[in-house]
Image 1 (spheres, helix red, strand yellow):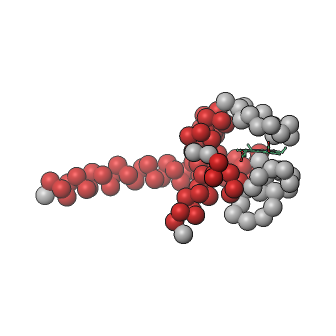
Image 2 (tube, helix red, strand yellow; image 1 turned 45 degrees about the horizontal axis):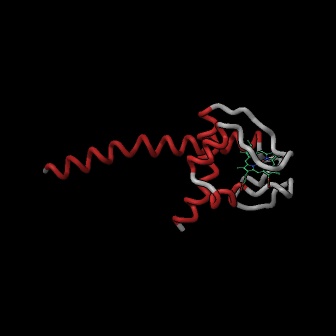
Length: 110
Ligand code: HEC
């Protein structure tokens, strides 16, 4: 009986977190379409319009989600001058990091 209650409580706690992540991914995708797609391939296929810019689906291998979020919050520093120094807010940084990292998670689930 006590175990069942614990499981119920755990499931209840997990739901909002999942919904949050999905919200972030959707927001991140919309932000990427507006701000990043002119250079980066942001979908699961296709080449980047700016050929030096890595496709988003390839970026997750180099980062942890938190690292990427921090990088966006700090104003990402990359060697390439074409990469704009966009001052995004914390919500946007979180959403974009979640969007980019979901490519890695999609692979794990296959
Ligand atoms: C004007 C073109 C351009 C735009 C717009 C652009 N990027 Fe980039 N980005 C680049 C280029 C070029 C590189 C590769 C830099 C290098 O190799 O040093 C890069 C690199 C990156 C990297 C590092 C990849 C790695 O593997 O280290 C990340 C992360 C990134 N961009 C995210 C974004 C995000 C998020 C946006 C939209 C908010 C964005 N970029 C918009 C051109 C762009």
